[in-house]
Image 1 (cartoon, helix red, strand yellow):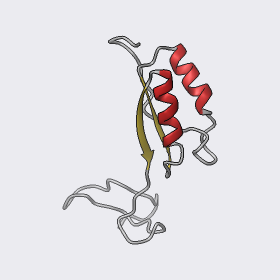
Image 2 (cartoon, helix red, strand yellow):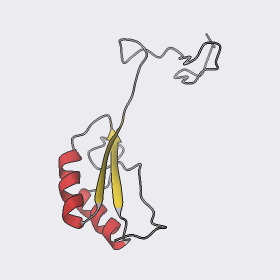
Image 3 (cartoon, one colour):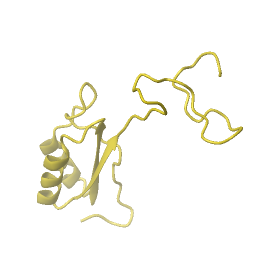
Length: 103
């Protein structure tokens, strides 16, 4: 299955991504198999609830499963911390959760 120029989706939200994903696994793998995709990723928002079902369906379809998650990180101890982050001394803001007043 697949060729040297095969395309693989690496950013896929399933119906396990609350309020963002609409792809049902059965339909997703049916289409991926039809398109002869050698692999497919799951990258749901902030959870891995669908990983087991995703893996089972991928293997059953002959498609390599790539298990991932779209995670949210904060530099502080609270998920409500939206302070700007500087990853290197003197560098520009790498992550700016707030689009006003620079620090």
